[in-house]
Length: 339
Image (cartoon, rainbow, N blue to C red; front, side):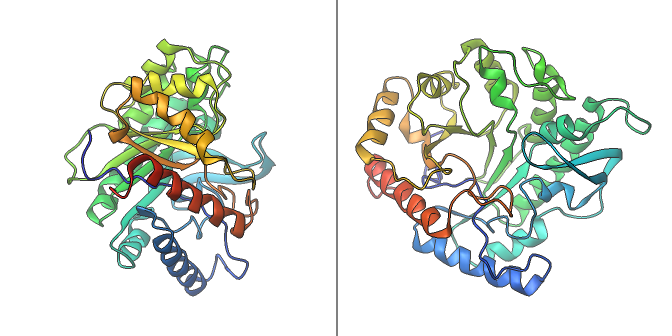
């Protein structure tokens, strides 16, 4: 897939919100997004996002604009507020395409949008009850909504769309995967893979468009090669966004299992720690990949979003900026100035 649209300097989409941001004030959000876009340009990122500034957390792109879900007062083990699906989901309009249109007007750099994957939402919000017969049914309905939104985003000029499914990497491990209402606990994860595949199934897209999947923020302790390959082939994503910040054999094995020619992005710096990585150490992890992967199909990014939950940023704004500068520096070590 090597071409001129590799978006070498990537990030997951969520950024630390400025202290003055008022999420319910459209003018405040618009001003903060414009400043964030300008800063991403100064950082020489090859993609720009709105930082998830208008949303409570990374799921909000769907949950804020799709009916059929109820926000509860409970908190899950992942620290996220629980939402419950109570009826078939329905989108009454675009999820992010209207805001993405404004984003494309701020810069010529490739706009990027991140969405929660339909399988992830189905697994974490489904509860047995009237209105929905199964998590698979909920997931398929969400997949159609996300698929339609991807088409709208592309029409508005978005060139990189990332689906986040933090549960998927459990399927690549040698230990039992974490459970959920969808069959993530099954070794083949048949339902989960089928649902996300339905959202990203190949369609005609303009040159340079990528639909990416981020299957989780950290690699499992050990990778089962067959399971990893089933994950990659089960979801026909253009790009896989993989953790690569710990220097473990499992991280390398996730890259090794990729189908030939598949686009991939390596999360080479830890988005949870302010300590800056040593560039030589990072390069010593990347260089051996050339034995089995084409680095012309690769990009680099932080390991995850910096503020997937608005109220819980993982770093300060200053530390975030230093990490993004480091990602840009690592990209230049890998590919010079050819982006």
